[in-house]
Length: 129
Image 1: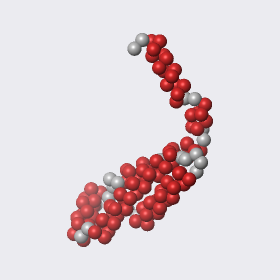
Image 2: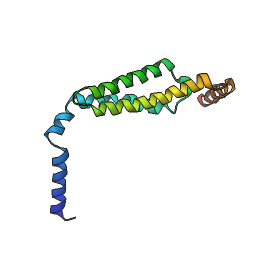
Image 3: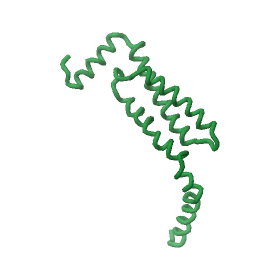
Image 4: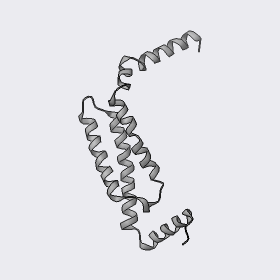
């Protein structure tokens, strides 16, 4: 690509995405609130790999309700906040997966399966059986 064509393409891209409206949006709580809130779903996704014995059922289901409420709120405000919606959608999915793991471990698995999981995690932690 020739240099003038490349410059024109770059200028067009900058004008399209880096303009006054975009910069105004980036400096609002409508943007930074959801961005800072993304720590919750990131932690929830990370926790999907952790031991089922550590899951708090009441907290998991509280977070499911919390994310459902804020997904609704994100679509009720004007203008609609799709970034907030996306943040809470990811959290909702992760928390529902955690809720499934909690119910599976505490109510569906047999006692032998639960004991095996406890033994496995005790050995990983270096605790004697």
